[in-house]
Each structure stands twice: as C-alpha cells, then as structure tokens.
Length: 266
Image (cartoon, rainbow, N blue to C red; front, side):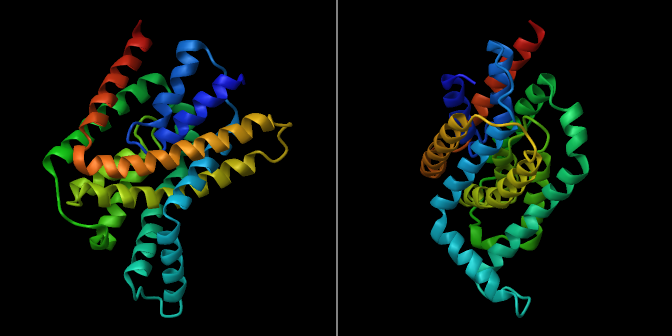
C-alpha cells in the first residue's frame, strides 16, 4: 500500500471501531470509489491490535480492578464485588458473538460482504440507534447491569458480524433500549470490545502463519495511528455523547448509507 492509504485506513479503523458508524461501511469506500486494493490480513490484524491497545490503555485502572475481582471470585464461584460481577457479565456478553462467529464466519464472509448489505444495515441500524436514543433514555448505570441485560447486549453484539451493523452501535442501541444512560451504555460497549477484539485479532493472527513477508512499515504505522486515533475517539466520545446524544451519528449513518446505495446503483 501507499503511505497515504496506510494512514487513511488506520485512522478510519481507529475511529470506526468505537464510534457507532460501522467500520466495514467505511473500509469499503476506498476500494469502490478509488479502486484501492484490499489492505491484506496482516494490516487488518495490526490496526485491530492498535485499537485493542487504546481501549486497554484508556480503561487500564478499571480493567485492572475487573481482572483482580474476577480472579478473587474464582474460589467461591460467586462474584463478591461490583468489579468481579461486571467482569463475569462481560464474559457472558462475549459468548454469543464468539459462538456465532465460529458457526457463521465463513457464510458471512462469502455472502454478506456486499455493498448492498452494508448500505442496508448502515441505514437500518442507524434508524434503530436513533429510536433507542430518542425513546429509551434511561437512568440505569453500569453497576445495574444484570445477567439478563448483559446477555441481551451480547446477543445484539453478535448481530455486528453482519457487515455495516457496527459493533459499538448495536451494543449501545441495546443498552439504551434496556434503560441505561448514554455514558453507561458506551462504557459497557467499550469494555465489551476488549475480549471481542482480542479473540478476533488472535483468530486472524493464526491465519498469518505461513503467509509471505509483510510490509512492516505499514504494520507499524497502522498500529500506532489506529491506537492513537482510537484513544482520542474513546475520550472524546464519552465526553460528547452525554451532552449531545447519538443523533449526529444517526444522521451520518443515514447519509453514508444513501451514499453507498448511490454508488451501487449509479
């Protein structure tokens, strides 16, 4: 890849991993509009690693408490603190996406990565996000997640395997619909991203075994830029969303979806 392509794709990944706007919808645009070639598996893994480093860095103290609480709860098998309880809920919410990914990843890759699907889901789940943000404003905090609500958010997250859905968008939509405030919905979504990105990145990393030599310059640049962009994105989004809400992202998704449909039918 050219340097400008590396920079563009890394920044897009860093932003779209945590904003509710769908990374797949954005990553399809360069190839369709400018004819860019696929960035390759190694680069894809690299930018996901950058996003993972960013979210772990941002929530490091919270993650440290969650991990300690989880290990302390193992002897009894029962969560005894708020941290251990939340850690178990994040594990529970990760299971649906993991199972669906293992069972349907090949089918999705072969049948659902079309521009028509991505445009449709970008619009459909954008409207759903707008409905949840407008009609379901709740006051539950992240400490009020239950086994049921965590599992429902986890099931919603499994839908994000369909290109154009947006992992962060659908998990925030589900949390808002369940009565959680915007900040809690976003924080749970971001924490839930950690095991999902780690699992998907590890799975893709295994596919790199035996692959030909990679462009290490692009890998390093992609990892660093994705990480920096994702960190700034998380920080800014948490400050922005409580004051303004999700509607700017809803409008953006609708415009993006319509733009993709135009490209498809022109």
